[in-house]
Image (cartoon, rainbow, N blue to C red; front, top):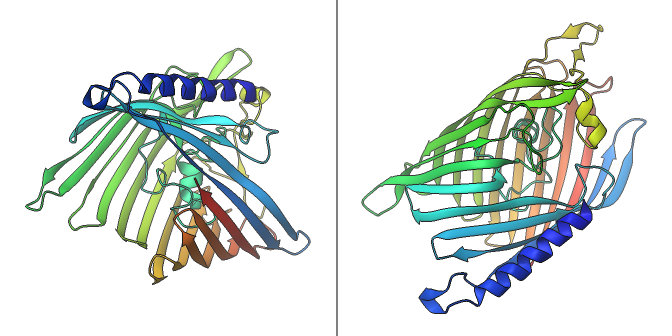
Length: 374
């Protein structure tokens, strides 16, 4: 898999670099490709009775190439490498590979592998979202470490999407955005299994500069083949979202609800794709709890203390894997982010966790993260 990824990236870079030379000025077929990426390293210490831990970790390294074809088509190819390459979820892999036709602001067409059009937080860069990780509801219900048991897919899938902005005000700013797509439903770098497709979309209004108020829907399935037959788990999800962003100031809140079961085993290696056992939950008395519903909510604030340099932040982050108090997990987070320059940032965070799935539900963690852009 690593060799295939590297060959794909190298081949793509050579191809686009060579073709960028064809034509000049407005007659160029390809614009000169832009190469960029980022790397993130972390230190995490967890203070939990009988299970203390602390470790340095290479969180991820990404490299991307992007540019335009015939001016109207935007393309991007992005690969990711993690410190741990032992499993499918952490091995080097392609995360983005798409082309988007962008001639019209109100109607754009994207084809390939890219972010699902679900929630505000999902499409954000891991550095820009501001915290040590994406919120629990987004991670578990938007395809990062999804509750279905899907392999880690960074919120992405393979498919076709339409999106656009329209209804300009007097200053020329669009007031409405929409996006809708058709996807395999199996996550990144994997073909469809049950021949059903996921329909995912959303829309929001932008009444004032920097504000978005929107809603999202997701109708689909996640499937595996086991003992010669296909087991398909239907998924019905929606999200309600609100955000205000101005410079480094971010205020954002989202609620996500899911109906649909998940597999007991997370897909990390090929053999896991044959395990179709269904995930179950039990309460503290050992009684099985219905697990066909899940939900979560988060609310955060990132506030500049020193312009373009120092930001203070806080987040409330709740995920309920049974849409009830059973096994609910809540994170209360505060921290500071310091930006040396646009290429170098340090993020610090203290998190108090209350996890009802544990006998001793309360513990705390400290995070320090160094992010480099190039």
